[in-house]
Image (cartoon, rainbow, N blue to C red; front, side):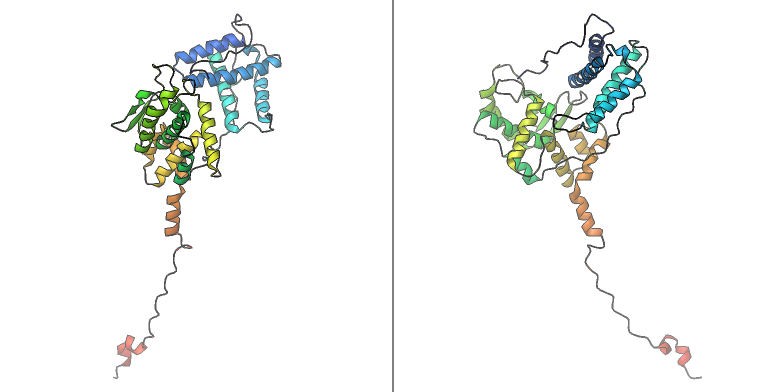
Length: 349
């Protein structure tokens, strides 16, 4: 498994000596993103989507970015919509959106820097993204069952148990987990420093005692059996003593979810959703959840108020008239004597 930063060799799109060719302009764009301090993940994703589009265009005779016209971009949008994978499954709209947003940003950059005469993607309309709820949320009992799946009698199983405990306790992203360092923990203050998270932002989050205990056990019993380089600072290591890849983490967690046989599917992000939802249901303020998850916009966090159903169920039960116990009818008042109501009418003159 390659270390972080190592990239697979890819075939150039065309001759790099052609300064207006696909590969030369893509290389220049990557340098511009690096100068602006874009994350490696964003640059890698941008490169991947532009390469796919470039290869598609070259097959259709557009051998340079300057050959691309508006009609070709619209044709590519229709191609993405109609594309099916080997299993006959179409691209999801979020994936469709990513393809086109990277494409639009790339051509916008080319036009601003006078690398092309006009921007063929300037009027490209991106597909509307729905407001999706998390697919699956674990209960506390289900989370504990998944976390209990690794075999803690070997180094990898002990590592996986510590990783699952950390995901559940802190709700961090899989890349943040993969890049965790030995010095990321403050055991006395029970905090976790997340360095260069999404958007290259740092944050400090609390970590539970149970997760700390399992990490301590992994450091004492598991990591020494995995480490190869004594100077390696990465916390969770592969069998080769290297940093784990995010995709590997996804596969590990997915297998543990399946082996727990809880009738739900998911991976690393499932624990992120679960932590946020369960903490909200237990009374945590949404702004604290926002800080834990590292969301820049509170609206992103508010999605968990829609899946935190327990409080809403309680309010519904206490206030909806159909669920309220029937009230006893008020006793009828005895009939009154009209003469007593108006004594003046009954007095003899």
